[in-house]
Length: 311
Image (tube, rainbow, N blue to C red; front, side):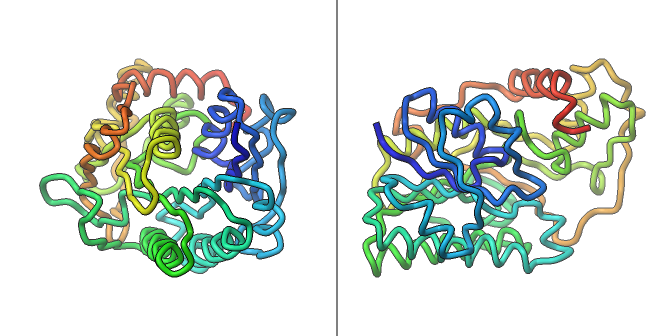
């Protein structure tokens, strides 16, 4: 049984991952600032089985306190919403870059056995064709993805210079329970449930590869257990969908009319397509267990039954 620090563990992917750790019997410490996207309510069913620390990864004292005694660090903590990063990049630089720096410095001092940094397919930029592999050149195109790429490079530098036992995962777009309603899928679901207009950027033709959050969590666990230090792993769902088609899937499941769809002005620098080659992660014995439709049915059911979360 390992002692694992999960930063950002009260947020969307983090809180789902913490449940997997608890189920497997690991000792889990959660460090979270509890901003708008993270809440203790997200952990209420496992609260008695984790060690929770309210703190900011960019504050060295908080990072030091949380990491002490932990063998493994899994860094989910980040500002993640692209639209917010366009409006104000500074919080993204502080959390995603300076926060990574504070964690890495603390890991140096406490002999952490594994440091897993959770990144994103957005660091690659837009894919006109084909699929990104882990050795492709990074080409981030918005402030959010630029800070995630910077965090990766800082981690790699610390691994090379100080011997940090680093692994990186780059996942495609996640969806599932506990995702903040500002993000595309939960916004589409919650608006449809209330018969509100569902805003879609541009003509809705931008393509994303969607992965159900539980599949990302099992992929990260596979990397922790079987991954090689110093390696990067793409974790994707293999579910490429145009935004308009993802929204239509939600409407079909809910039995709602397409008249709820509305098109709005596109955002600046909107990447057209993300697509990952996941062969490397699959060699660890992992593969996603959910089709887009199956994962979406679970997600919709969760938002229907947990109105406290988004209302």
